[in-house]
Length: 364
Image (cartoon, rainbow, N blue to C red; front, side, top):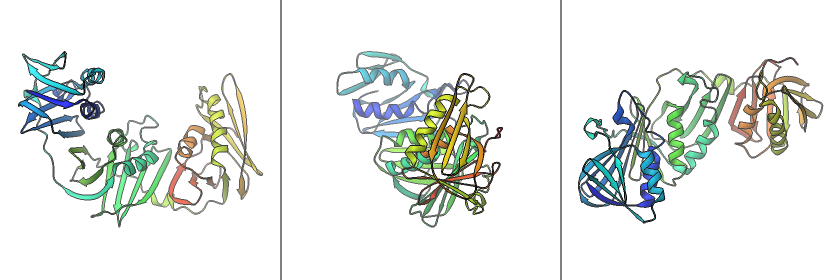
């Protein structure tokens, strides 16, 4: 095998596989990037137990062949090469890349990756899709919960609308966006797969197709095929929660003012052994007082607000609130009922992006 590829193309393609390929003691070949030069085209393949990624590149091929290699060190070296083109040659049991020689894996045991051609659900731009994921993915795996249900995003394609929902059992994030879809379908995507999709898409600006089979999500874009397993778990019925209209207290804040105060309180409470990032929130009169404490410090922060309804005092995780605020641009609306009921947080004038969070039991 011998071919040449543009340096930037090689870095972009191989870099995508470093997010997928991990050491696998059961199937060692899955730790490797499979590279095949054939029919005037180079095919890159990588997979773990959940995800498959296939990339195609038009290259100058002198001789056909294939090789299996761990990508991390290879990528590190290619980034340091000064030439514009990277030369790959498999020779005497090694992969020679420009002036370096790399050990290779046994490619005879590499599994066959077959591209599925399913029905396309929707098409979208990678940049726009990444922006949607950014607003909900912060909640996946946030609590370190090993339960895959609480490290996933539910996608609902229905009547030209896409709904994204995620929960970690303490809180729930919901987003709705117009999107032309060809069929109605609900899917549950693992958080780890979402993280890989996000890392790949955030550096792209391409149109892509989103499709599903019985148990897989399939994304295709220019010279690329991505597939991941879907979860078959039952997602909680979230609609009664986001449609709850029984809140009788409403508090409105300037985003920057609230965010600034939360940062200061987190600087103290992040060092608390008993209740990390937890503070007391006292909604009283026209001000919110946020009080935090750790072993070595105390802090009180006041934030002006517009209040409707009675005063309220409760405990909340400051970091949880800040994660939502970092994803909005306008004023923050907090709706509540009492100190033990779930709070609803939204952006002013936007009921298509809803955040629900449970208070924390503290002495108030």
